[in-house]
Image 1 (cartoon, rainbow, N blue to C red):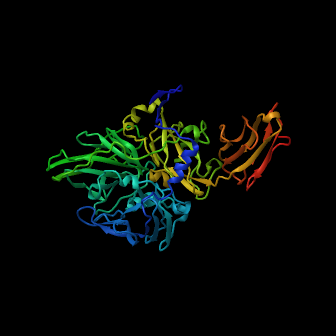
Image 2: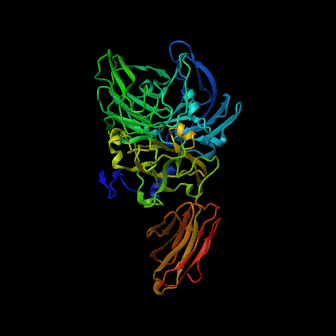
Image 3: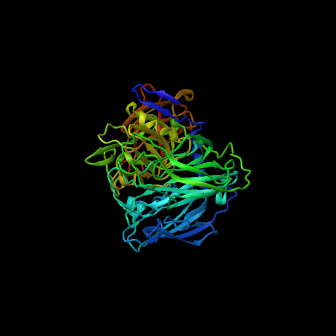
Length: 608
């Protein structure tokens, strides 16, 4: 859907296909964390040792790399799959609901930690840089795999060294399966192929050259699964390709060399409701997509090229021999044998639910993350990274639906492309706005966006804003949001957000009105660091108190008797919640009786 806004910005809105109430959405979100029926829980234990190694990446001398050496300690065969000769870590295959233990052993000369990119796990399992372990140290991960089927990945996340460690080779693919995905007629086994796309620079001795320029690291050699000039020996079959942009800062505009449309099955957070076609596929660093490619009409002896097409408007310089936005070949498919295949593209893939913007606790008042540039540094809401720091407007409640807006159109003196990533749950992109002055460049990549699914990275071209709906994790604690241009992240374009457990304060309403007349409720109270919601039961309507240091308003004419009011909101910076209530002029006399104060501070005016 397209519309021009009054201020001249062009708005591109992703409208949901269905609407659900808060209760239904919450129930479905809660169901995400349970093992699917029919899938027996597996207990999986692996050891991942981050260590230096030598690999024959290019002809001639071997390259010194850093790699994750995997060992399966317990679990089914096939859980770990090595990529022969590659510096990349093993492919890890698990099922939703599995108990997963991973021991990280740091065999490097500097501290490191692993982030499970895309997984909704407890804060201590997420790979925050404050958990980084020193050389010789170990870190034990232990969680239940919560996510729906999809292509996820793992990579290091130490403060100021993430880009360098990924560039040295530390990364791996994590594939989650579930019962719904397994029931689909999709390619399996050798026809289900993960493809990790990266770029590198090397010196005359085949050793990595890494630098961390302000705009991000760009290599001049393209590698797929750790190999340059990658060729996949293919049959006349259908293939499921799991594409991962594992580069530090390069964006790929992927297209088939013969202009066959891209048939997209999945995004960051798993399968779409139905296959979608795109003329090309835009993947920013950290993003994933699964595509269906049918080679049955190809003759043995022919080839199909996967290319990255030219685009403009990114605002990013780089290594002059292969700058950002240049066109190049990524890999080739060599069709060298004939095989029989009877799969057909499923018209429906997976059941998805759509959040409704009106159900967000801050509907109409998005939580804004503004990208600016000052003193040679990209900032988020004017702030840089603090290891344990969190601002009042970065404090939220667990398991709460919110609207977030990422804004890359702040009038900053330096505006470049930024792929924004939030740790924890995936989100739904609901709207994009583009400054008219940036529209020509934006239009060279926008047809390759896939906003219809679940995402954990949203790419913002210069002059672009994106609004997303996210239901925050059920796990309390400190999590990260940042630019997934790894050099931007390492330079401080990263912040914490804190999730506090939402606690309900329940209040009973009793009316002294003749014949049980209505009671009108008004409120005036502070909601520092978050939003509050007044939820009325029996349900006659929900009132959302928007974010801000002070808010006030008047509620419904409420039926009295056993009516229950619940206040739900995140705590203030000092950990307190304050609610005050006053009777509206002319309202019937009634009183509010506090039933459960919990850890909150609450008071109600006398006579109400």
